[in-house]
Image (spheres, one colour):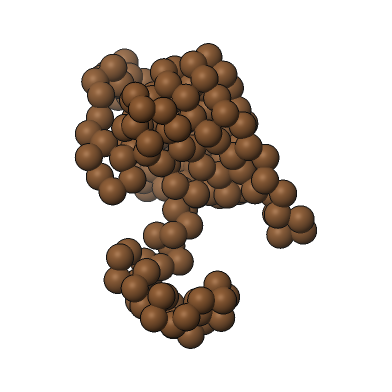
Length: 193
């Protein structure tokens, strides 16, 4: 056995993980490791925000591991929102397929500058890595967008969920001071999340 094959067998036997995923023996890889079907089926948007994100990352398409890309399909009910969030490990490029979306992102704390634009079908917008951004369906019809992300595991942190829905909860006095709100308002928001 050649030196390379010995090392390769040791890696597979020891269960090498890359990006938190087990690397499959190349002899066991199949076409289905690079395939996903069904994005054409509208997702359920009957939730409080009215939107649903279908993320196709390395959890759904095993062949994406180590390739540095992923995809998100976003279904929007009329007047719905993909709320302010960040992707800590990926830049996003969004293409509107149907409808009209108000989109935007905020720069870092140095100036908190808002970049925003109304997008129609065929329009494209970029959200730089790690910046808070959102999409809002301004129309009375459904909207659909697709987003490419520059990571096989871009992550997502929804701002309101993280701040008001942490487990255990952040001390309400901390949030009251940070948001300059009454403690009762903070308690109300923490119960909602």
